[in-house]
Image 1 (cartoon, rainbow, N blue to C red):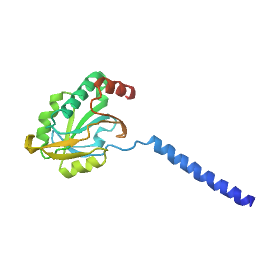
Image 2: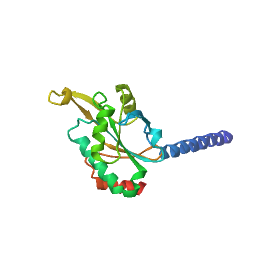
Image 3: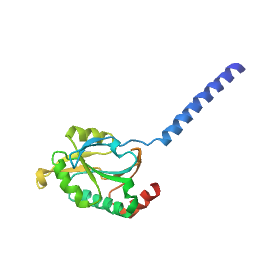
Image 4: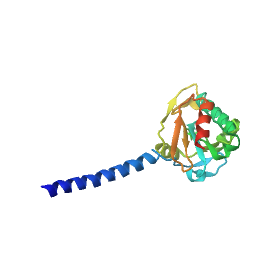
Length: 189
């Protein structure tokens, strides 16, 4: 009976140490990674691998957005300007959720308006859908007769931060002031 109890304790300790090791690994890993292969506003294919070694500020939106997208991209521009010399360590990325209208040409006209080195990314509807599955976002087409093209897009309005290995680091909801994002980003980089 004593040998059985000792065997039970030994097995329990082995399982417990495996559980603790798995838990420690899970706590150190990001909840998700940036994962994409899309066409940028210059017509070049870009993947998350192209930005390894740099922090990424990623925002999903569309060029016909009347308020949330231009406001957020203006905040991103203010953050990039506030970073000064450290701006080279961060790549701002705008991924469209409206590939039907947001072609590379459309993005090439739109993203430079914010003058922050933002890279605009688009792709086929299938590529955008695949990309969106790797991020905790949602978007939907909403028919609206008064909108350009007869529709608008509802979407997640968070700004995501990914570390130098494309691992999720943080996110900020719409309306977070540029100063707050800048202070957080400076501590990290």
